[in-house]
Amino acid sequence: MKDSKPTLIVIGVLVVVVGIALVAVKVFSGPSTADPEVLSRTGLHWHPELTIFVKEERQGIPANIGISAVHNPVHTHDATGVIHLEMQGLVKKSNTKLGVFFRVWNKTFADFGTTTPRMTVNGVENIELLDYPMKDKDKIELYFE
Image (cartoon, rainbow, N blue to C red; front, top):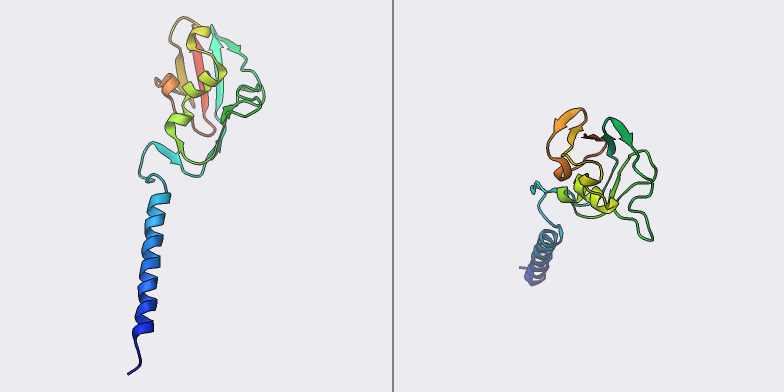
């Protein structure tokens, strides 16, 4: 009968290595994809579009909001109303809310009117307002009286 000790050592080492690998995957994989708040663990690059009307007159949204020595992940490049959501790593819904863009812009709804605006997203009425988590290619319109 051959000596089975080397075979047992190899099997033992393999079991330990596989066990360590499984633990490492669980520890370093981040939150579960089942978390409804998590949009991505590897970043995203989305382009919702915002249009603001005050008393039926379209308002401009300036270029370079959130652009300085360091780009804010939520910013504009031009004055078209396209908002760039360029995020790396873990991205939660809270990172993509319309309110984040207004904070980066340093504006509030009061800067556009005294009433709460009416909002549509892709042509459908929406009451989430600043809490709305923007999505790629959304067409968001705010109407102030």
